[in-house]
Every structure is written in structure tokens, then in C-alpha cells.
Length: 319
Length: 309
Image (cartoon, each protein chain N blue to C red):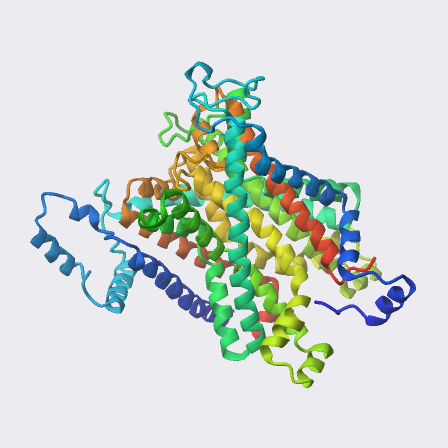
């Protein structure tokens, strides 16, 4: 297992490097000067600006600039936000826990929907339940998150007036009351993301279970006289999870996209809304850093998926 | 994938029936999928409405009328008006043209790149294949939306100067969405190539002295087309969602061009007193995407050669 982990970690390094090359190329190819903010400042005379450029290494050959940039990123020297003059890493660390919490909760919700519904539908293929579940899943992942978000606000906040639609970071309450308010304001962002993911995953789970359920080892288990529930849980679902984990890992970049949108709709103060406000304010260091963090998160969760994969399928650990 | 069914069962069944071409057969199977058929009808109506609608409903998209602000649906304005009294039906019809055009063109870019990468990887194998697949996996693990936003933020202004605000953003959005969506097609085409290039008919063509290009273009690619068509259909839906998302975040087309996402962006702050403003464009996006997805599902059933009914 350790060996497998180390190998996976080593494979992740070239991907991270590849992503950093792409990020840097985009930045280097971009027309105009990304540090124009400094250039337009009348308080800085041209020769000082030239010195500043030289000190930032902007006139060096491109591969040297890339290496310098990469090491600065790795050391956590991400620069200062143009807008708030706060170090970018602090800004991101403030926002990251919220994003992770909302996303994590929505993924758990998605799993709680997709697993039972998908398995139940697949064990009764082409039944009425299966057809309804399948159609609903189609509808669910065809509804873009920004539209479901607006529909939820329209229905639960405006029409019924049950839930607040703006996320409030400093709730004036303590103890259970605080948790209750927190729960009430998180429920819509989590549900929007979770339902969207859940719909997509239901289809994966269903088709994976359908593939496994026809295999010989399931027939054997049934011939041994095991109960139907035990067969489903121990012999079918565990094997069906292997392709599902792969597909879920492939979907991760899309999950981050959904997180950006929901954070924007419900004004959740996470790194997604930080990215949007930074773009609208031309805050280059923040934009670069947030994109880098998103890439690193995708790679990290791919790694987690690989570990899960090794646990679900012991055969590949020993390869 | 193709030909993985035992040949005997298929062959005897086909011999009993009068000969039908593969496309006809696919059409027959597609018509059996009721939801896909209904979706095809809905989609045709939507496309037709978007194409000829602005001619039949010749209301200007930017006709400001302060006496008719934020009105609900009425006879003069079937889908109501926005905060400047602009007619929403006209704006949605116009926005649909852009959304569908972006979806279709971005799909062409994605499928073009995907087929190219997949065929090169599939026919050459070896180191080139490994390198191309590494690239594909790398692109699959890129966070697409943040990168899309980043690229549009960095390149928008210079392209605007080059080819005008509308065309510049169109080219940028189509290119970027296309370049982030080719990976599934490439993987699919490569997998098809791997199974097809060992088939007897390809071997026969090779024995007859067909060049590599001819093998690919004439014998392998046409047989790999089925799954590519399905993936292309789904890609249109994905591209439409991507474009609407960008516009919804306020970073797509310029504000005066009412794409569906942009209409939602403008409407979201007026949800409490003008819900129709958000509902109709959102419904348009949803209907388009869901019907494209169902059509894709029907095509998958129709074009899957493993399925013999």
C-alpha cells in the first residue's frame, strides 16, 4: 500500500508541473502587462517601473521566469492583492474552509442520493422506479446549477420565506442557535450542488451495478443461498464502485465549476466568489493564485480517488 | 467495441430480414426511443423559433420603454419585459441564436481536436500514443471554469480590438470551450481505433496496399463514427451550459448582447418582483439542454452496434 501511494504521488508531480506550465503559458502569452496596475500608477516614474520590472524578473528569458515563478508559488510567496493589499495566501486561507465545507457537504448529499437510488434502480432494471429515476436524473443534470439556484431562491426564500438567500458570515448567536442558523443558510447552496452531482452519479452507479450484477460471481453468491441484501452490498456494490470512483474523479473539475457558480449566487464567501470578484477588479495575483489552488485541489482529490481505488480493488495495489 | 457480439446470431437474424442500410436501421431504433423522439421535436421547434422567430416577431431587442418596466406576460409582451421595458421574447429569441451558435461551433472545435488527437494516438501507438494520452489526462484534470475565466479575463480586450467586441468574444469563447472539451472524444476515438485496426477488413485493405491515411480516412474513421456522434451531441449541451455559465457570471458576451445566461445574470437581482424575467431564459436553457441530452441518449441506443433488436 505504501509503495502504491508513493508511486501515485510521483505520478501526480508531472501533472502538477504540466498544469503549472499551462497556467504560466497563459499568463505569459496574455497581451499587455499583467502588472499594468503598477504601470498606470502616476506615483511611480518610468525608470522606477523599469527597475521594478527588472527586480521582478519580467525581462528575463521565459524559462527562467517560469522556474522563478514556480518556486515562488511553491514557497507560498503569492504576492499581494492589488485591491486589499493583503497577502494573497492569507486571503485564500480565510476563504478556503468555507468552500471545502460547502463542497464536502454537497458531495456527501450527492452520494446519499446516488448510491441508494442507483443501486435500487439497477436491481430492478426497466421497472417503473428505474424509468422515473432515470428520467429525473436526466432532468437533474440538464438543469444548470445557476438556474436551480435561482429557482430555489424564488421558491424557498421569496415564495415560502423559509430560508435566507444571502450567506451571513457573522451570525449573532451562539451554541445550538448558531448551528441552526448556519444549517439554514447552508442548506440551499449544498442542495443545489448536491442534487446536480447526485443526478449525474445516479446514472454512473446504475450502469456500473448493471454491469456487475450479470457476472458469474454474483450468480455463485446467489447459488450459495446468500440473502439478496447481502449479495447487493458485499458482492455487487463494492465491485461496482470501482468504475464509479474513476468517473467521479473525472467529474471533479466540473464540481469546482459548480462551486464557483453556487458561491456566486448565494454569496457564500469562498474562494470561488473570491475568484469572480478578483476578475471583476482586475486583481491578477489573486486570480492566478486561486486558479493554482483549484488545480492543486483537483490533483489532490484525484490522489484521494486513487487511494480509494486501491482500497476497493486490492488487486491493483500489488501490481 | 464494434463487432464484439458473436457474429453468428447477428448474421442469421440479418439474413432473415430484408436488407436495410445501417443508417436506416439506426433511424428505426431511434424512433423507438419515445423520449428521444419527443426531445427531437422540442429541439427542432426551439431551433426553428430561434432562426425564424426574430422575423415573425420583429420587436427590437433594445427598444427601451419606461412605461412598460418589469411587466409580467401580456398580449403586447408575451414573455413580459425587463427593467428597461425591453421585450423579453425578442431578447430570448436573439439570445438563443448566440447560445446555439456557440454550442454548435464549440462542439465542432472539440470534436475536430478530439478526432485528430484520438486518431493520431490510435493509429501510431507507442510513445506518441503515451504522450498524447498523458496530455489528454492532464487536460481532464484541469479546473475548467477557473481557467476559462482566467483566459477570457486575460485575452478579452486585445481580441476585441482585433475583430470587434461581438466577434472577438465569440471566437474566444468558442475556442476556449472547444479546447476544454475535446478529451472524451479523443479517448473514445483512440479506443475505437485500437479495436478496429486489428479487424480483418482493415487488414485486408492494408494487404491491398492502402496507405495509412487512406486506412484511417476510408476504413477506420467511418466505423468509429457512431460513438463520436453521440459524444458530439452531448458536447453541444455542455458548451451551451458553459457559455451560459460565463454569461451568468457576467464574464461572457458584452452586456448589450442578451444571451440566455446574461438575461439570467440581469434578472437575478430582481427575482422578488419580476420572477418571469429569470424563469423564461432559464427555461429556454433547460429545455434546450435536456432535449439535446435525450436526443444523445436516443442516438446512443440507435448507434450502438452491440445492441441488436
